[in-house]
Length: 601
Ligand code: ADP
Image (cartoon, rainbow, N blue to C red):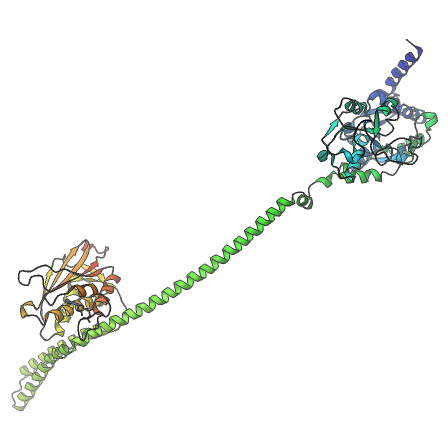
């Protein structure tokens, strides 16, 4: 074993004993814990930071400095738990801890050799010498080998440059190939053809002469005195930072101790803290680290990203609002139209009802008018009788034969005749009165008798009216008495008109009362002139009449009265009789029975 190799081994063993362990170097005194981001592995970290530990040991004898190597997450967690007094990490990680844990830089590494502390870090994108790629702008659609997505010099600096060119690596590259530390993996990935380009920290290429021969740098920039190639802007070097709980006096002592280190003597030097705004700007642009919140979708960013959907949705909403308003408007206008139509119908119905009542009234008056001659004759009888009795009283008085009994008898006869006349007039008046329809429960037979009585009372020589009654005794119907009497009177009068010119044997009218299909049926049969085909067809038309003085309204009004009661009025083929054959006419009025009267069941 050569002396060189032996001395190297001894150095490593010593260094490991001193630095690799988190144990303090000196058992005595106070601990001074320095957390360091060890991305190149334990050996590299020990080798890199040995001068620092030696310096602190020499200058701060009361403290036992310890180097604690951690990765990104481990460093953050240990700092958060208060297990570290100082941290040394890359600028990107530092500004994250600055925002989240209050880390505060007191020094920045001074690498020397033309690398000013504030312009010491950059990255190169390398491609094999025979690659067709010429600049960073050619990377779209290519595979890029990187150390890791969280690497500052190993990825984020290049990401920043690509973003300025409008290339979003995750979206626009064919793939990001993460090789992990150490960075040699990037070169190996390129050699193996796993990537088209790779990212290295600036100056790493220059320290490996064999790499420089095989690879070239994309978009190299001229950065003044900076001694290495770079594809990116330059950023400040690693800081040494205190944490919120680090005693101020200790910070001061550490800063003074380290500021005195010299690159040429100690192999490591520190400068006063550099300006890290460039790192802040980079992270803000990339929306990572302390600026990751900018990636949280806001309404505006969402709208920008999904504008076709937003526009479609907005269109849908507008269409829906338009539709709703239109439907609402249509509903309102149709409702108004419907209400107006209903009001119009109601008004028309009222007018029709009035007209019908008027017509009924006219029809009653017309019946009365036609019967007025006989009415006068009818009244004449009681009046003549009254006059007779009065005259006989006068005569007896003149002859002094007036006895009390004779006066009583004559007076009671006069009163009786006067009552008869008043009865006739009362019925006529009630019949002729103009009124509105009203329904009441009435015995069916009584109603028919009254109508027949009225009819007969109006005629001087009334025809024979024969009533055959097959109704249950006391059957009630719910009708407007006067209207039904009007129908019967009309049918009786028509029957009389048709038969009074006939031989006496045919001048009789038959009324038949019975129940058929749950309805009261009143059939009026005469043996008069009968109905020819034409008359039968037009019978119920308004103003159809074959009479010289007829109005032609009677039957049409009678039918509408029957229908208003839920009944019917029809003309039927009369039965043949032995005496008169098939002559005359037959009208049938049918009316519903009221369900609620137990006597009708
Ligand atoms: P009017 O009695 O004023 O003519 P109606 O409507 O009561 O009006 O009768 C219409 C027509 O029907 C009568 O003119 C008559 O020709 C015919 N008619 C009605 N009843 C009978 C009937 N019992 N016998 C024959 N014809 C009749």
